Image (cartoon, rainbow, N blue to C red; front, side, top):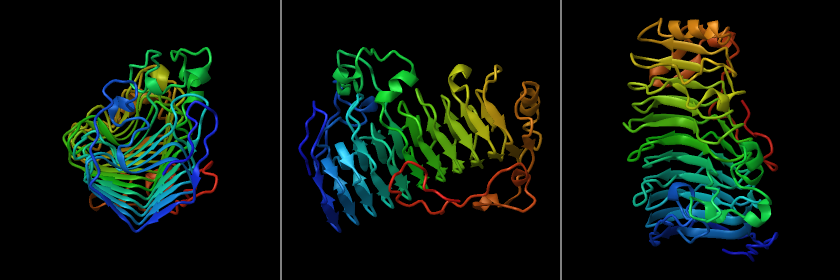
Length: 426
């Protein structure tokens, strides 16, 4: 489905109002990597503006794919390229695909920001990436103000959901994504400027990733995640997701803000029995981690259940408040990477290790000497039945007394006309 694309110009004319419902799509071709041409999306995980999927929207508005099946194909499931607004991808199943399930890919960095306000919900994604092990379940690239909600994703070889930019600012067009940069629109700009200056050309902002059920990710690859945000704009929200039961021995995080990422909100998520490396939530920038539960890592924890993975200057201004970290064995540090030169707000957190009730003593003593974690406690948060996945808190929980807000992962996250504010309610 293709509208009239004026690639170099300011305006496209989209196709409108097409609805595909109750169909099965199968047996499409596989595709090759972009091969360091500057037209490969991050790390050549996919190709820019290319026919790699069973269904492709290129210049569409108010279109929908509902109640369809995508199965047994060499490439991806659905992709929405360049101009794509107010489209719906709901209640579909994706399985046995060579590539990823759903890709939203707008124009490269510049002033043309026309891939936005799309709705991706209630899809069932599993056993994908059969040929491309680095394929993603749902990927939002240079696309903003989208709602990604109530999707179930499991048994993927790499990452479940990603919102990224990650541009190689190379005017020769060789570095990753560099061939997509709209240099004629950026003005006197080199790409070496600060994130705040570059961010105006990064359109992956104000996306809401909410109420998704993610488990058994990273079946094959390493350095992957349940939810991954990196190298893109501000205002993204990761809210009320359940990332759990990932037995992979590969290194990775349940929720991660990676390189060049700031002003992301990670709130009201549950990370449970995640990976043998047990890294629950990680951040490399000025992001905010509030009111989450990270519980029961199945083994040794690498770097910390809550990990700040860069130097203190980059994550300066972050807020880490009202989280519950519940460990169950030895070699499960609660935090990692927090600098001695503290410039972040971290407080009112609960730390507890069932195996060693004094596991947080040294950290909390150090932190209080630095003027942080003054209200945080080492105490049993009093879950009703954490080992069996009951995350409700007893009425006398010290976490509630510190201001932790109990939440419902099944709370109503519904399509919002504007997508400007979170439509998640607790």
